Length: 347
Image 1: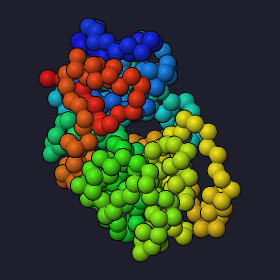
Image 2 (image 1 turned 45 degrees about the vertical axis):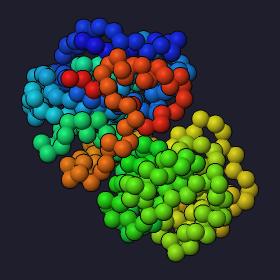
Image 3 (image 1 turned 120 degrees about the vertical axis):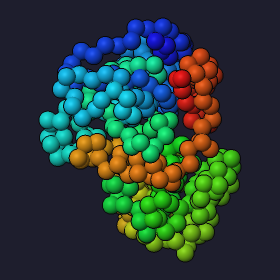
Image 4 (image 1 turned 90 degrees about the horizontal axis):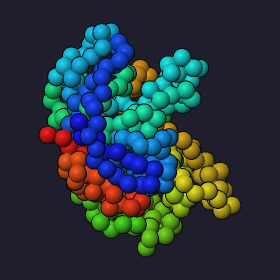
């Protein structure tokens, strides 16, 4: 089978590898149709951030069951599935409370084990999520990134009737924005420094967009005076500047969900920290995308929205191609962030 393999020196190669074989009774062999590059994969490729090399990455994928281990009775060959990349231990105190995202004894497909940027993969039954017949198989590769924003909504007790503000109009932010609109948010605003991303946010239904490169936090705050209460702010960009901005533009008693992963130290000015107190903000840390019962309501909601065609995915895709084309597109990043989703598709 063809597999896109990452080597420690940052090279992206297409290699022929044997089709993996089922070993355990709860194993599932999946023939992969579509797999997406995640932003978290970029340091694994270009900054020696993987657990081992060479490695096949990919934790956002969908495909069809090819075979099952003897104890897997609820799936059969031909069933459409998506990857649930986390494999928690299910037995630690966190898992017993249903806090699967917080498990310390976990495995992870496409990071701690081989991933879905290949024609076939063997995973545990807990790592696949059955897709409904109404959903396009390619859409299943977007379920995992969709559930990142939905997990923040889950922790915030929903977004219905709230004024949602998305700080960072990348893939995660734009998916969360569309979910908020579909789930009954009162308004959804998007903030970014890229006019093209903001134009796309507007086309996808944003109530209002702001470019924080040109507009100050105070200007953005004042522009949302009529939506200053019942706010849910999602920070998805993962930079110290955007975390500060999320706090600065939040209204009274807003919920601020921190979704983006920081790669640099955060130093809050005293005035910004004071706003957390003076505005009585609620800060929510959101990590991964799972809840009980496994894998969580986030996955059911994402599936429902996709099946009902409530989310537009095509405008978020910058590149889609076969293994050679995918490898070239990934290599061309040279460590830079994606400007749209890079997708691998197998015939």
